[in-house]
Length: 305
Ligand code: PMP
Image: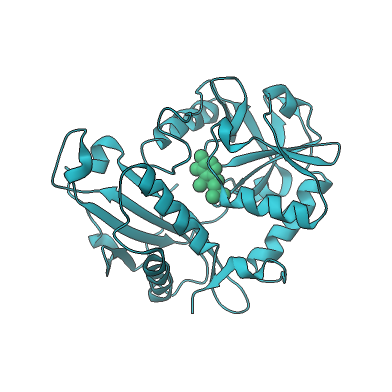
């Protein structure tokens, strides 16, 4: 997807012009994927732009960095302030926010602890990742032959750059086969997640999602969906799912910052159908929250000004 340029990018503590936010070709992360990042959204509300669960995302960034032996060069509060300043400087009402912390230029080789750690935040306007049509009517998913990572490889608990090569393989495989998104299984054959989303299935009115131990990123949208469900008295279970649990689900959907809540209408050519009542309820409540119309979860919005 092309990135629409805006004016400024925050880089190592300074706002720099978009076109000048560059790194050296011998940047460690470019060669070895040694970085961690976040995907966050800022939404337009009647009280001005607000970033959804900014602090929670930055806390996850700090945990991802810790797993990879990196120390964040800035505190979570400093990064939150920098994010808000950047959105204001670019005069955006709504945008995607991409903080990245990565090993920079100065050392090569696989013992990276001597390389400098750089930090940048970029923002740009970005529409629905899997399309508005997908949010409305659902998408077609396919189980990929590429497996998800597990706790003893590049752990999926961290949102690290290198692990997304695996997601890219799955996404390319299913896109070339004519589908919209991949469902990845772990090495035990259980469903873990999409290439960039968590996954939920509904059966008999109950919502099920794989536990984190099945190779799942601790999604902030996943957590939000679980809280919404609790608030709506919908039972939620974290339980392992097989691909056939998805085939016979009454409803299924993906959740993620870029994608938001996206119904799955077909999986491996098994029809699930148009978005059902549970998915619709969750989608509606999610929209109310991000657009600043929900009292109970109002604190999830961190206003830019
Ligand atoms: N799983 C993977 C692999 C992802 O890349 C993402 C997107 N960050 C998610 C799940 C969803 O996480 P979140 O809801 O925090 O965006």
